[in-house]
Length: 290
Ligand code: UTP
Image (tube, rainbow, N blue to C red; front, side, top):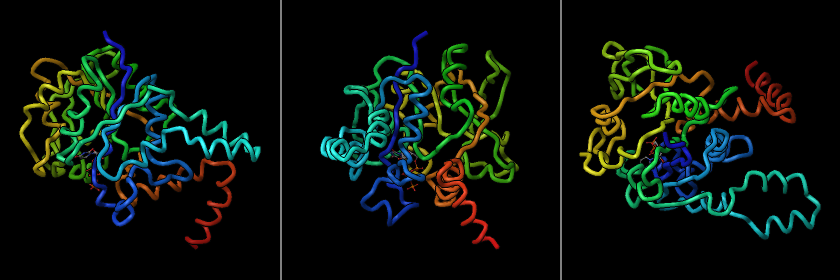
C-alpha cells in the first residue's frame, strides 16, 4: 500500500460569498484570529504526516504563494529588532524548500476540475484533498484519523460528520453501507443537497478526502454536472465500479469558513482558546449580549 505523502488544496474559487473582501484578497487569506484560514488547513495536513503541499490557485491568489514563502526583509528586520519569539514562530511554520508546489486552474470550472489540474503534481499515488474553507478542531485531527483508517483499508477514504437532519439540503449526503475495517463504513450512495425527506442519512461530506490517482482518469472525461461545473462527487461515485469508498466518521468541531457565519464563529471559538485573548473576548461578548 502506498503512503499518503501529498495533499492538494484547491484554492481557485471566486469566494463570491465574501465579496467585496475577496475582490483583491483570496478568501483563504482571510484571518481567523491571527492566521489565515489556509494555514490552519496546511497545519492539519502536516500533523497527518503530509510531506508535499500542492495548491491549485487562480488569478488574484498570489498572496497565498507569498504567505508560504520566506520574507527575507521581514525576517531580517525582526532579527535586528530582537523579536526572536515571533521570528521563531514564523520560521517553524515555514515550509521547507521544495515541499510546496503551485499550479493554476485557469477558469473556475468546479472542484472536480480543480482537482484534475493537480494530476501531474500528484502522479501515480494516493493523495489527501483538503477543502480550505473548512477549519477543523479536534483532539486528533480529521486528516490524521483518515490516514490511520486508510492504512487499514487502502482504497479511498471520505470524511463525514452528522448534520441537523433538517439541514441536509446544504450538503453532500452519503448513504452508509456495511462497517469496514478500522471502524469505517462503506459508502454506497451519495446525494447532493437532498431535501430532508429524500436524504439517505444525515452524514455529510465535510471536505476531507483520501483518493486514489484513478480519479484523474475519471475527471478527464467527466461531463459537467450541477451548476454547470465538473463535480468531484460524480467522479468519486464512478470510482465505486472498481474500488471502495470508505466513510470516516469525524468527531470534532468544524467551522465552514466559506460562509460569513461560520467564519465569525471560527474567530470567536479560536479567540476563546487563546490565553491572552480569552478573558477579554468573553467580557466583550457578555457586554454585547446583555
Ligand atoms: P466553493 O464553491 O465553496 O468556493 O468551493 P468558492 O467558489 O470559492 O466560493 P463561493 O461559493 O463563490 O463563495 C469549495 C472549494 O473549492 C475550490 C474553492 O477555492 C474552495 O476552496 N474551488 C471551487 C476551486 O478551486 N475551483 C473551482 O472551480 C471551484
